[in-house]
Image (tube, rainbow, N blue to C red; front, side):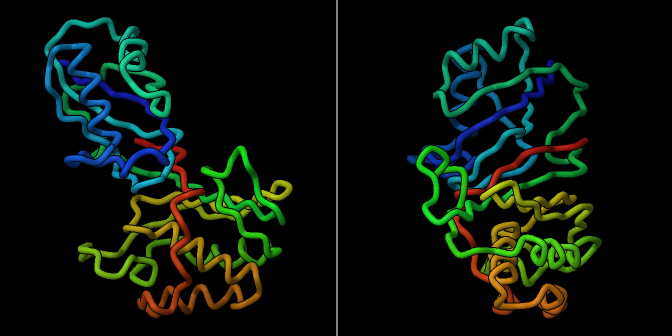
Length: 244
């Protein structure tokens, strides 16, 4: 049995998230369909984690197992020929049979991009959240630093979700500006449902001066979703790296 690891890039706007589900366009199902066409085998494609509807990925990792002796270097070309242009297999690597994309994952990095110009963008409108009110990225960066470390992120978890354990480790967190684009970057051992989008919504309030950077720490410690900011739209969120 061969274990194949894929590095995948996708534009999430046309899909109802990663997870396979009936009667809804999804990334997992599209790639599994392509694998079956190319190899003749039905597979279970395992990702490093699920991304929600509308969320993009520059580097999603997934693996599947097949019996067929198909040249590894031809797999990306073969699969891409069967996929929509909004999904690209960047690379295929044969790995140890014990490798598991989700269980072996150590770190993930997500970025949330905010277009902070007055008029927004036409070309990148599905990759950036437009917020025309001037934001102070330095205060946002000061606020996000309170999230580094191991904490209970219950305040930044979507209400009604089933995660019983809301403790996660954030290894790195920063906010940077490049012209009109503000990028919020978070690297952690895992993320709760809507966690990055809620953190980003809270930081927008910091950048606008509605709350102080230090209040991010107080919101974190409150363990109360109602204390945090709004959940920003999936537009702007991207999985940019997965580490093993």
